[in-house]
Image 1 (tube, rainbow over the protein chains, first blue to last red):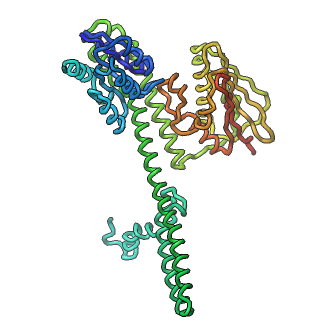
Image 2 (image 1 turned 90 degrees about the horizontal axis):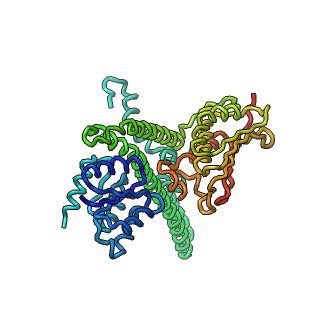
Image 3 (image 1 turned 45 degrees about the horizontal axis):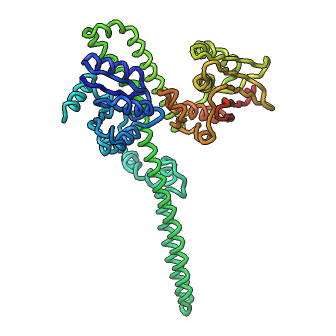
Length: 123
Length: 332
């Protein structure tokens, strides 16, 4: 039972993964753009953030950077969930401490949920 | 290569053809889409030629003016300067090749992202439907999810069509089937499908034309794509309560103009010079619509230019935009 912030601009993905994680017993807070996502990180203090990269208003990597720069949010684990296959973006995300980098089309809902569990289980 | 039993001559040509083709430097440069002065194979040959000529000339001159060694020195300096300049051209040529390569990789990165977006929706929605049984509220929503599947399949199809169009444009395989086209009639036809879209966004869509305008010379299907694109954009960037007006008017001798004015968000000065570029998406586009390909205006421009027409716009931030294109009248 964790509070998960899901930053993703595609409503259909918010719905499918959001419902799936809720069915698993998590509380899911949706955010539809980078700015709203960053505001929600500060307001909601989630246990985990699922972060898309190509987002309106603020790029996912900028959200991640801003989270890391703020002491109060720096420790929140982040899983990057994207469709970008850029080596640079992966490197940058890992550098900024993302726990995992998942390409959406290559992971099923169950896989994502497993990953969420394993990241939440880490000390 | 299969030339057993054939006549010796044809066998010889068959084997030699690739080598001969490599020797045709001009063709090679053209296939790489490089100008001669930025095409390394051509420049290397030229450099070799310059070197040989310079050797011969300095030998001839040095043996004639044996008493004046400074002349030979001058020639060597001049030749070095020419080699230096040619060397610079060669470096520039390789830079161009590297740049083209970079653009291609970028293209693939953007395209794969664009294609994956609807695919990931399809994948996860299907998975949800498959599991449907477990949480009861998911089953009730099956109809809604079918709609999501249908929309995203459509999105994929459109994206692939757009990409093929771009590849045709870039490969120069862009055949126009010109015929006389009545711009007003084509617009009227498309308005039937666009009206509901405008109404859904609470935008008034108007069309006025002067009767009796001559038909333009155009490829009907390609022209439809342009009108559809420009109208789609105008509706999309006009907030509820706004107005989109299409007009077809004469624009000087033998030219007809189609234009669309909206009361939408407009385009900022900074972004105006980029909007016809491939994959360019304005900050506002990204904010408003996650699904755009950034190719609509690029394709519209390529199509109108291929017709020998003109396309342009005027806009101010917050003041709406007017896009127009002009095409020549069909001559019998």
